[in-house]
Amino acid sequence: MAFNNVGPLTNLAAGQAFEWFYSFGGDPGTQMATADIKTPNSGAVHLADNQRKEKNNNGSTTYFVRITNQGPGSCFHNLQGGGMA
Image (cartoon, rainbow, N blue to C red; front, side, top):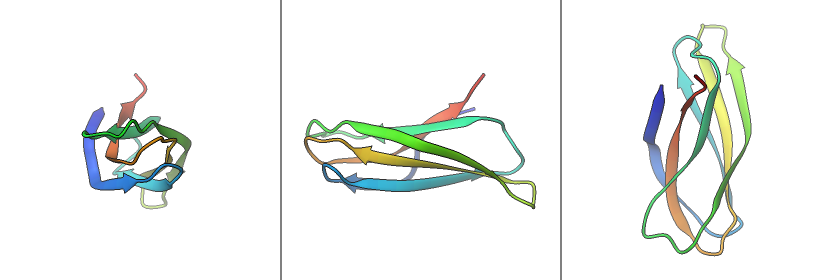
């Protein structure tokens, strides 16, 4: 299951990072997320790392990812990603 344009637009200056989380009912398996970078873009490169998964007692699953702007400029993003097929 792929997803794009998820979550609020978030602006990061060069060197800033933001921790995201997203949830699904049930357990859809391994999911990965990256920055859905928006334009205009001042040359920013966004790094997605620190991907994590939490299985909740109610049967839902929560995923976490950190997005870091490696610069050189600022840029807006939200999330895109999907499962491993």
